[in-house]
Amino acid sequence: MPPHHHLQSVCDQPLGHELRIENLSVNYGEVRALEEVNLRIRCAGCLALVGPNGAGKSTLLKSLAGIVTPNSGELRWREKPLRECSAEIAYLAQRSEVDWNFPLTVRGLVEMGRFPHLGWWRRFGKRDREIIDQSLETMRLTDLAGRQISALSGGQQQRAFVARALAQEAHIFLLDEPFTGLDRPSQDLLTELVTQLARDGRLVIASHHDLDTVPDIFDEVLLLNRRPIAFGGVEEVFNVTNLEACFGSLNFHAETSNQPPVPAPAASAPGSRIAGNSRASSLHS
Image (cartoon, rainbow, N blue to C red; front, side, top):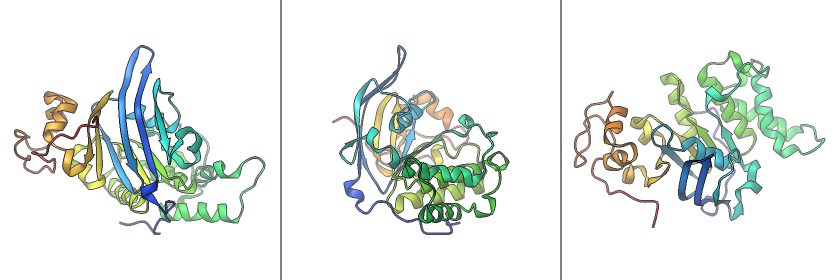
């Protein structure tokens, strides 16, 4: 089910819009959460962050969003330090981290996306209101604009936060487990919206735990376990060999225990679209 409107592109030159991560490392106290992450990715892409619990997926997203301060490394967007481009970055936290009892309507939430563009003392103008209205309609939320966010379903809540990011006119969408806890129709609609964001020139980076749906949603994948295991196109690197290296053989088979048994890396598992015989592609040259 497609969105009501074709999403307006905010990126007229996606090949010139590159996110570059160089030698990124993050510690929490004495615990190393991320180590030596190197990555280059451009707009008009949809990147999955895949790895076991505690692998650093959320830490990477929060580092890009400016919530976590790295211990070392460089983050750049369009050749500028990423911290100087905060208005172009939208971060959607895990639903479990949001205070859904905060007294805020759907429209009020989406209006917050315009705040980075207003500056001091400026009121909403005609263009701001048009962008807010279009964002609500694109996410199929117009009829719910006056409802409290606490009264929404899980899928509606996620769409409301995507609408806020659209109103922000963000280039980079950072989504932390956006599909977790959603029913199938909500997952399908959010999949259509997320892939449309990428087709219209935005860069979507999302942590994701459902291995079997990665090929449906994403065109690139970063396999991460505190440090990069493999990065590249889904068809190239999303395979049993790399997944076992990322999760560990026993943990990987536990992750896929609700699917048919995964055979040796020389062949794909029946009923699974995880490639079985692609070569590993290391992030490090």
